[in-house]
Image 1 (cartoon, one colour):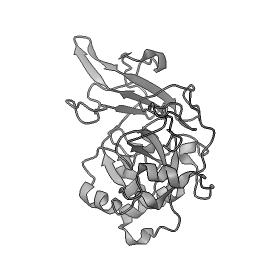
Image 2 (cartoon, helix red, strand yellow):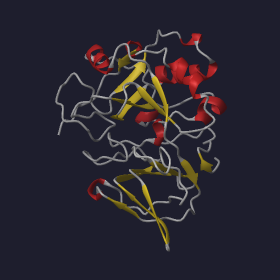
Image 3 (cartoon, rainbow, N blue to C red):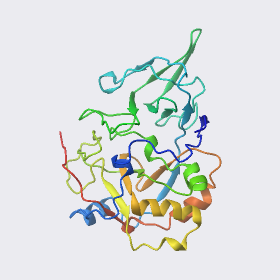
Image 4 (cartoon, rainbow, N blue to C red):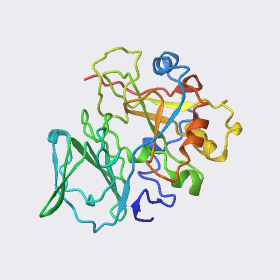
Length: 285
């Protein structure tokens, strides 16, 4: 596995094979409320490729630095192995979510922070952030019930990213992808651990909702790169991880993407082409 920004994992997959992100859900039953839930996101709205979040792979000896959190009660205290030049979602002057994702290659751990703000001083760079989470990628451990992470659903972000190395080097995606929608329910289902809504409407999707592209959807009409994505959506699906644009599937912020081509193709897929996989227990408090 290489080091650096958006480095290739060489086919290595975060988390064990039986982790929810990595399980084949192509033959799981459809949720009884699937038509209503899909309609609430938008039957005619297109799948939107959103290449917005970078990551950096660091060695095990990367120096750890302190992170000051504004939500410390639901954050892992660290310290975190964040390089001083770690890429921030949207760039250094961004006003959006400003995620920073760091993958420790040698210790196989993932460090993620939200609303990241580097603090540069005489002693070096430290960080402030709203929240942060550390994930041991060799286990299936979840966040404590009710806890956020660097993502609204209390999930890791990195394992659900659509990555350039998978599409063009491995030519295979072996995990679920992360997606967002505008209106969610004040509820979550496994593997999510947190909600981010005030609405109790049962016909809105809870965090952790999993959808898949219908098996009879003809993916052969697409380019090889788009087929890699669509085959994964049929086998592993997408997990609802945050509030955002409807049917936005999150990719890495990587200059190698031909965004116009891939995004244009994926827009041919509509909400009605998805179905909700049967959900587990719904937590509302």
